[in-house]
Length: 333
Image (cartoon, rainbow, N blue to C red; front, top):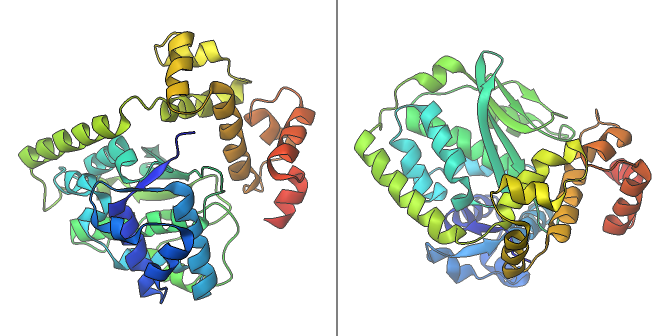
């Protein structure tokens, strides 16, 4: 199956953040079977699950579950690959966020970003996906911390979000979160998100440059086209996420929404080392982990959100995925 990957640019940022926290990343990369030397190659990519293991081991070694917040201290546009420069040359943060969403996969395929108006403001909404491993919360926290610090750096102002939202329970020590975000924090939220005042995102950026923005758009578009190639896996996952709450998606409906014939869809997925059924199962498994982290959702609601007509089918699938029941899994969370 085609693995999700993370750019070396973003991986360097993670390494810098971990080393600030006293973690010896060169040794850790070797332990995890990751290529430390590849960090110097701008086109290198690292497997998503490898990055998840990196976060998990770093937390164990440092004893600091908030180590992801160190990303706020290692800000440089290059961490966002060409996307960082495209955002900088945008007219304002609103336009910069639109570019960030458009080119997100260049930085890391494990994250899905969306940007939309919310309650008289704007929300940058983040979802982190794993491949075989559930994503580390440090990965999401690092993304939020870095993005906010980058916005402050671009604007030259101490930008304060209206609210910062986190999935899952609040940590035992909130002090580092308050220090980094300097904004109201909300836990057990539906999504990870930065919520901004409308006016803050519509102020002109000091680095705005229309011709440079167009140039970076071209570079980013070319990179994305080269990198994506024929990868239809990511597009199928997105369609499945959208369709699942309406019931189990059928292959023909997914093919139709991608303007492909069923036969072409099947062939393209086969070329990428996967199948429609495998992707459906995989997407449900990932979403199940995310939904169970939200205490406001009942197991019955989660079952329907995952497109299971009968909750007993959800329980059977969950036991096959994790060798435990959804209730036991949630209790451990």
